[in-house]
Image (cartoon, rainbow, N blue to C red; front, side, top):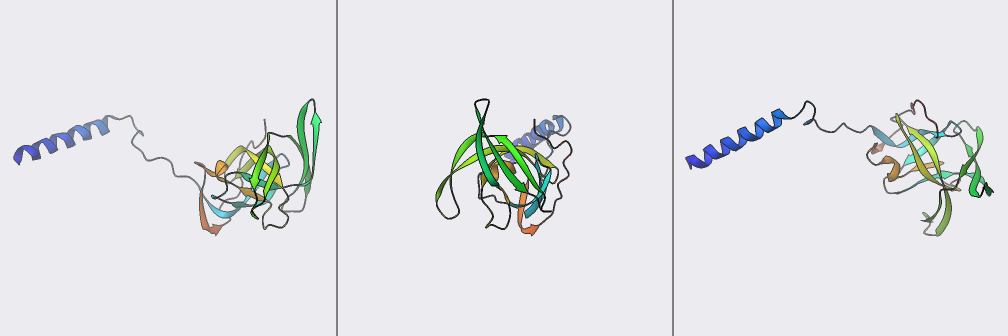
Length: 175
C-alpha cells in the first residue's frame, strides 16, 4: 500500500512540474465569448444600416429581408440588386455578386431557391463578412436572421435576454 502512495505522489509531482514548466498563459482557459441576446441590433455593410436581428442557433445560414430583388449580369458574373430598410426607415440600394443559389426549406416547409451574397455584419464588437441569403421576410418580426455560421465561436446567445450589445465595430467594410 505504501508503495502505491509513493507512486501516486511522484506522479502528481511530475504532473505539477510539467504544468509549471508551460509558457505563461498556456494553461489559461480560453477567452469567454461575448454574450448576446436572442434579439440584437446589427450593423450591415454595405449601407451602414442598423437592423433588428434575431440570433438563431437552430438556423445554419443567415437570411436578410430584401425588397425589389433584381438579378443581372455584369462582366459575365451574375449580380443581384436589392433594397434594405434600416430600423430608422432609411432605404439603401445594394448590389452584390451572387456567391451561389441556396436551396432552403422555409419555415413553412417549402423548398426555395434564394440568391446568396456576402455582407459585413457587426454585432457588439464582432464583425464578420458572411454569406446571407436574400428573401422576403416582411411577414416576420425581424428583417435579419443570423445563423450558426456567423455565431459559432464568436458569440454566445442567451435566449432569455434581448439587446445586450450595441454594434461598435471599427473598420466595418467589405473588401
